[in-house]
Length: 285
Ligand code: ACM
Image (cartoon, rainbow, N blue to C red):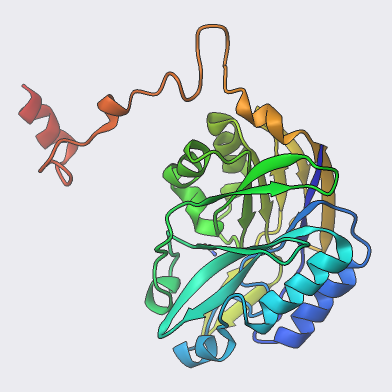
């Protein structure tokens, strides 16, 4: 069995030390095998400038956020997943890192960038990797990561599931209101567990404000909501799950979520990518 959960809190813009300390205070009361923290949890989200982002981007695993996560993971015997701005050479990625109690660090780089992220970050270049992990009591499972807006693209969760994920950790800074109602579908259509850790609060740039919607959420493999946080306020919740139930993808004795896929029917016809519905119909006549 796996005790898995999320930590929801309000990051403060560019207040890296304050945000690290806030998370450390929450973790001292936590009892989990796997805990997911929000996207960009040490830096905040709505960057005023590229220079602000440059100032907080860190290499992985040698940057201070990953180092601190390694310390927490070892002290609390918890696998931690969290979002941070990752610097590699000149490039900055909106990444999620997974840190184990033994000090292993794995990375996913957000593939679907949202809004002004498209001007600031490089799109991910690591695909959808899935990692073999083990709880302290020896439960082996496979963990995949996606970051916030990746939820809007069913291909992200599908790719992780096809790559073998039992559990998808989903650090987020959600602003669109639809994700908490969509993640149960992502969980059900892929028969995986999902853990979305969102933040609260708001950040402004000029006359524009982004309000983060809270509602962190854990979904089971049938799409059931196992835990959901309020829209405001800090929250730490965990549930007990058996990650291996994700491996039985039967819907009934005739149907199987993956076995019944028809990839041959999903392929777009070459040259037709931008055709309007009308053009598609006339081409088919
Ligand atoms: C988002 O992708 N942070 C909305």
